Length: 172
Image 1 (cartoon, rainbow, N blue to C red):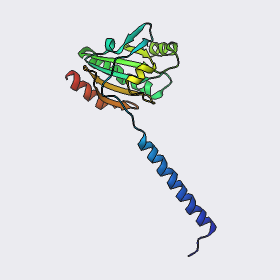
Image 2 (image 1 turned 30 degrees about the vertical axis):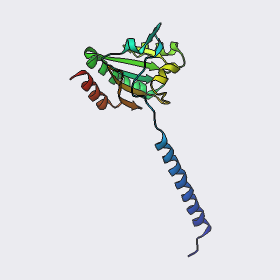
Image 3 (image 1 turned 90 degrees about the vertical axis):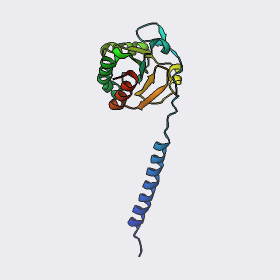
């Protein structure tokens, strides 16, 4: 059985496609994040003015959220975060946002326009390093009173899982 030129080119093209696809899948699986077990204290600028640190802003449970005004997934999480704040805030939850916009002015405008009631820091290298220097947003960390990271969501937060963790840490 002889292959025509077109069949041979199609076969070679198919093999090349499979090799590229397998390489791309392998690269996706290699993308791992090295998050710390605990959050060490860090200092950052509050977008509303002044400086603060993680130790001063944490609660019985703390939800640290990396965000930016230009990130659609970050904006989509806001109603859920506001719901968590209303439901768990009285029980000791503190939400701490770290905004990765290019300037504090942009971050401050975002906080005001979206009516974000919790503390928002402007990013710096120490803050991001304390959280494992993730290269994506949004990222959400559920942290207990002893600064141990209990759960991390890379990408849009998993509302059911985060709610479960908050209930576990703060009591039902």
